[in-house]
Image 1 (cartoon, rainbow over the protein chains, first blue to last red):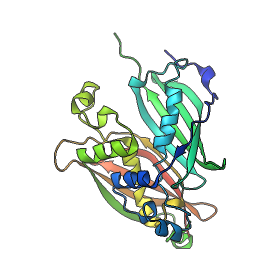
Image 2 (cartoon, rainbow over the protein chains, first blue to last red):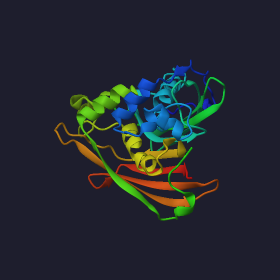
Image 3 (cartoon, rainbow over the protein chains, first blue to last red):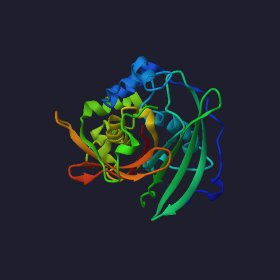
Length: 150
Length: 142
């Protein structure tokens, strides 16, 4: 069943703040095998002009994707998540995410379309810090394959 | 932001040092924990095959995280990345053995933009085939 086009432009309420912990950043950097000291050493981060250790560029996806769950799970939208794959991902940064940030995400449905039987859903997540300043925008394209013929 | 590469020193066509990233089942379990993405297609062979995959596959976001390291290792400051986007075109299949799989990533400066930024086009391959498409980063140089 085609997704309802009237959902295009719909925004969901901002999420509760996610507090970025330095040990969570370390855990993520270790998981991707990235030894850049800016992720773990405050002095190294400061030498690069950052007030605190920063997170790897894709770290914030865990936060924005969880926020996009509001959209994915919206019963009115009716997306069948068992058929969904991640199509595209993009980030645009005002500054890197850093330890101590309290980040909220506002998710908006940017586009819905059908392509070759697939439903394609574009979700934009705007990430702001505790001061209300923009940190990063994440665009996630989800592709739902058609239900299998009975 | 303090990139160790100077804008004046790069040209369209400048190649970034290529890197090879190993990925084993253990890597995927560790990434699942760190990222919170516990989709069983990334650790459960039986489940992966039931949904039509050849075997367990790497998280697309894991591959995306590795690919940008060619850029962040080049510039030194990961905070110099202004934009980064990819398309997930093909899965990285990770066999259940000691060697796992490898992802090879190279990058080339594709355009010099305003404000000391350049666009880097990345190529990520696994077993000779591209796994990311439209893989581009904009990075601010010194």
